[in-house]
Amino acid sequence: MNNLTLLYKIQWKMFVNRFFRDKKQTAISGLAALAILAVVAAVIWFFRGRFFYDLGQGSYKEIQLALAIVFSITLMIMFAFQFFASLINLVSNFYKSPDINYLVSTPLPSGLVLMYKLINHTFKSIGKEAVFFFPLYIAIAISINATALFYIILPITYIIVAAIASSLGIIFGMIFLRKFSIRIYRYLVNIGNFIVIAAVWLLALNFITIPEPLGKIAEFILTRENIALIIPFISGAELLSNTALGLELTALKPLAYLLGVAAVLIVLTYYTAKHNFYAGWMNSTHVAEKKTTPMQKKHKKTATKNSHPILSLTKYEFIRASKNYDIMAGALLFYALYIGMMFYLNTSDMEFKLAAAIAMAAGMFFISTGTAVPFVSSEITKNPQTAKFQYSTMKFLPLKSKDILSARILMIFIPTLVVLTIGLTTLAISLDQTLTVILIANLLQLFILIGYVTLSQAYEVMYYQRFFENQKFIGGLISLLAPIVYQLLTIGLFILYQLKPLFPNLWLNPILNIPTLVAIATLTILCQLTYTYNLGKKAWDKMEF
Figure 1 (cartoon, helix red, strand yellow):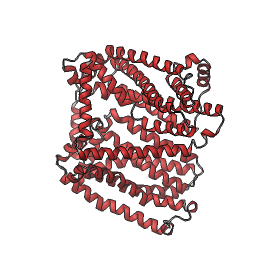
Figure 2 (cartoon, one colour):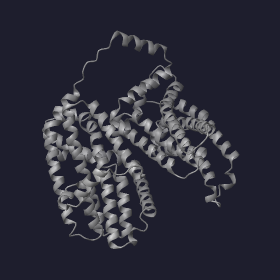
Figure 3 (cartoon, one colour):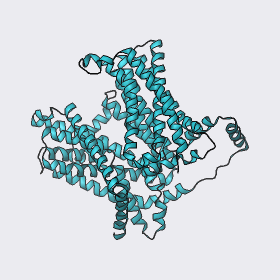
């Protein structure tokens, strides 16, 4: 136990050195924390005003039923996301973890090392969804004037339910990885994660209904309380509902079930990991020798010799990204969000002009971000300070800065353009638009997308200049705001033009006309293709390692 405490003391020291090493860094961390709190407060205000403004006005039974439904569904979704997050992070946190080799080589007992990694993995897996679920639950609590005990029980319930989901992910993942390769595991997990995200979106948008057999199974379980409470998200929902309504004594039973299931699963997880992890780790570290045939060697030499440097570099980046399985789920998440948005736009009563503008603006963010995710090394997600060094290999290639920047623009632009073109064309066809309108809409999207990708890639490189390295807050703020301002000038003003009848007294109305909007958008795009592109080239030339 002393050794485990020492490991966490070292981890705490690393945390302090990263965020509070001096007064300047402490101030930056404080500002970032205030910004996060402001965003959380805004999300709480949105949830309460949009969904739960009249939740506390119903009868006691209506409130109780509404809480049971909302808490059960949200905890079930969170449970599924946490389960797949645990499966996805299992390889990077255990089998491919940079510190696992070091920890195993120390005199620390193997069981202690495993326990340390299990605890770290659980807390890394359960943190991301909290940003969404806590504001949601707090908004509900404020709407119904929940008791003070609810705010104490809420984080405890969330951690326990999420830890159970994470433990199940560890059990299934380690048993699978003992017998099968990491590549097969990653493929199956990413496919499963995508199916879960798509199912949640389709259920939320009422595109699919729960199959009748599943409904009967759910009804059978829910009518038997002792069986139902074994399921973590049901016992967690009942615990939160009873606590919010002041039924503390009634809440003791689901709390006991929740703690009992958690204790059993945590012990089972440890023993499962103890018997499966090291065998799977040894299998994953073995790399089979690959033999290259003479034909493959000849093709490789010919392809390298005849390819343009920009195309060769772009092809290399795509090959590297296709093998980055660790964070492929992040890309699938952004793609799933885009698909969900397109389903909504296809079934809404919105005019095509407004729907197309929203699809372009949101699609450029979702798809370009999702496309960029696999190009980021998984090591960078654990230590963002090493992000700059992903460019070190390209910096020392015998290529000009414009070739490198052009390749980076192409590797994001091509997949994004393909997906957005398919999405916009599908939207136009579903809204009965002519071929001419479809071609014009896709052409406008093409020009706007070129400027957007050029801007994002140029500012990403500029972020690693010496000035921005010394002023990280300013650099991060510019990198965040620049794409937003670009979209406001190219698409945002057009959306306001379409919504002009709803805001007759808006101060921007005098300039919201087609000639002015076309002029502003054209100048903005040309600026990105000339001025910003040249800034990106100069940033490549000045980058130091």
